[in-house]
Amino acid sequence: MSLFLRLAIGFVLLIIVCGGLAGLSAWHQTRDTVNELFDTQQMLFAKRLIALDPTSLQDVTLPKTKAILRHHRGDQDDDALAFAIFSAAGQPLLNDGENGRDLQFDHQRDGFVDGRLRGDKDSWRLVWLTSEDKRYRVVVGQEWEYREDMTRDLALSSLLPWLIAMPFMLLLLLALVWFELRPLKRLTLSLHQRAPDDATPLPDTRLPKEVKPLVVALNGLFSRMAHLVQRERRFTSDAAHELRSPLAALRVQSEVIQLADDDEAMRKRAIQQLDSGIVRATRLVDQLLTLSRVEADDLRSEFQPVALAPLLQNLLAEHFPQAEQQNTALQFTSHAEPVMNGHPLLLGLMVRNLLDNALRYSPSGSTVDVQLNARAITVDDNGPGVSDEQLIRLGERFWRPPGQAQTGSGLGLSIVKNIAQLHGVRLQFSQRASGGLRVTLSW
Image (tube, rainbow, N blue to C red; front, side):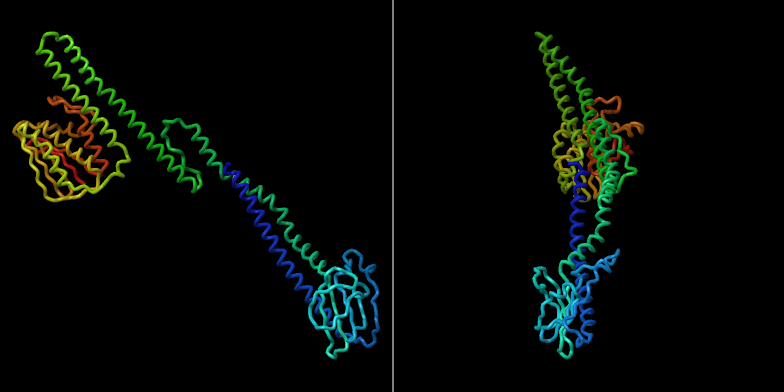
């Protein structure tokens, strides 16, 4: 069911319920007001009658006046008011000539009572008064049906303008709702016509305040989806581009093995090259997958406090056999024991790549120095270093300084850069005065 239809049904039901409650309340208030007014009128009329001198009266009946008063607005209902005067013994002295002749004497008490006329089943509202000398009694009556008709007429006259205006008010209200829902209809049409890879933000001008957060959230979603699609496309393109050369080399080495025949030396060398190519391809795939995972935004939920000093000590111990094989010294100096909120595996991978890079490009007999401060980690090596122009490009995807003897894919420092950005860590490369490269991670 559409929102407009639900609002229309809701408005109709709301108007019916509220109108019904308002009509019921108006009827009750009008009834109470009418009863109070006519009770006052009856009491005043009874007081006027009781002031008469009934000694000269003896069963007098007033003439009928309907023919005289029935001109335009002078119509008189015979149940509007009826009165009679009785002696203390119950003898009729005076009546109005209409229903007053049928009023029955009641000697019990003064005040308002409900009763009936002689030979009539309709209920009447009666007020009795006794003269101060107790010689006669006055009764003024009015039929309840007359009061109910008056109440209904007054209530309808006050509610009729609203009953006439309600349909028009409902139509105008529905038209207003339809007009105000147009931005949602335009938004829906725009989304239907939108291409799957379109990351253009939706316009948020001339929108109601309640709709703007939805458009802002949708624009954020489009941006994230575009980033995700771009990242997946870049991963596919990078993987296809970078794996082409290792796979071609593996194919060449496989053909060399097949052509080696009895040349054992050639076969052995080809097998070694094949193993080296497999290791390189495996490392490249691992780095591509790691880089793709690091660029995802959902890893922040896995952050936890990580003690950096034990982490660095374990990583240095892990690289000690490689450093010993290359005749390179590993030094670690801790000036503090900071704790960082982050992903333990990714922080370890970041420092591991820095250590691996420093050991691979440092000559034999050199030193790799790692220092831990309260707000920074520095890794110094004695490698050949790079020029100032090349220093700016360090960390770019698949970029390596020219003239490198060591093999690599150019993804190690890119992974370090992405992990640092994920943790809000600043990555800085600088030249050492004594030669080599210094990498600083500060937060």
